[in-house]
Image 1 (cartoon, rainbow, N blue to C red):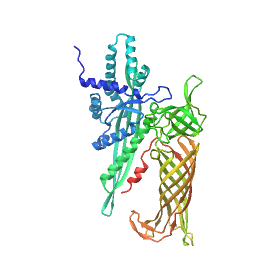
Image 2: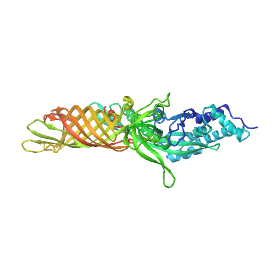
Image 3: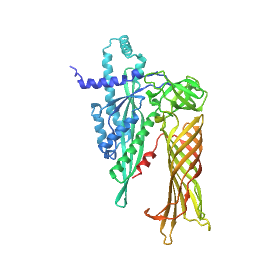
Image 4: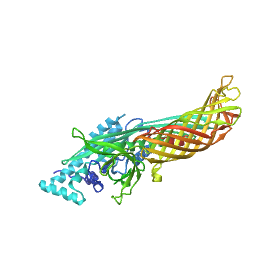
Length: 553
């Protein structure tokens, strides 16, 4: 007498079968240029695939799992979790944890040998059990058609949804922590650097002719670093770790979007000037200023269908299509082609920020008759965080910038240099608004700037000292950019700074404060011009904003 499945086994089989059908009601057309929602199963745990990763505490593992889940579980997916203690995953987790160290490929091999075959077996057994109840092909087709109609879809759509099933497995294979300490008066300042590495392995569940297979399709990997300087060691460690994890999860989110089957795609519904309308919106998780390539599929000379690009748009207005599927979102054209309704829009995933590389001048002068002071050239970088999620309008940014350069401070009578070398340094925070017209955009900027000037010199005994002057003031900026490609822009900026300071502080070679000294009153007020290259990155090694905030003890 055959062994009957237990209720637990029946429930697990039902879960696997119906999780594949769960996306049916939300599925959209299966055309090449229209996105189909994906049904995703995931292991609700983090696989620790190396001895270093196993040094993570339970709280740290929990934080990584929660943060990765928040980032990777995108609105474009429908999710079905498998618990860590599930019979399906117990053998897999046990074998992974028993290994000393595992590469991504070794994780996949164990998954294919333990976890994946069990899923395939259960789904195939369930399908065979259903099929065995059918007498002939006609009855079988009637059964499929009836089930499809019960769910309001076609039999073809049923197979399409079954082909939209994926499994993802998060893992960690790297973790390290470095600690430096420095005594300051009666306190100790700790600087902690945390580095983590890991990723997500994606498998696709394919269903054809009543048979199921699970195949590895893509692995997303990321490394990330977090920094923190605090007087409390536990605070420094926690802040550095959280900064590394947040950046790590953000990188994995964008890497997930870059997989072709996960990219949002749709058709152009209307074209008005340089604006396009399309049926996609909040339900798919669109963001203001997201990039979409415009193009169409054309047949090549050898008969293959290829996607031909014809410019790109950025999202300017997002429709709430969760209740009204016919409502249109709109994008504004940047590189504009010969567009018409029916053309395709394909997502071009990038982080929701821009990186600026700057080369220009920093102003510096004095009204003192005893000194000649002149600013010089400098190099810098800026990161612009997109605020579209807050403003719900395009091209609003919060900017953090740093620039370093040289200057000249000499005796006005003799022309001798006062210092062996002079350095100018600037950090700023500001709000920026860009206004786009095709490839061109102009912008205005308003914020605050902290500026420093320091000079190094040696006394007659050979001891080295640094004299430092600092100022806080306003920053006003204007700029003009030209878009070179979908992720690269070049431009020029004009910046106006305010402020003056006559306060100088002397430090010895150990960076210990010696005392206040007299020196020229430096005027930081003035204008600077810089050329800039703007890049939209797919990932970052660390997050500059969290690094800056974590450097305040």
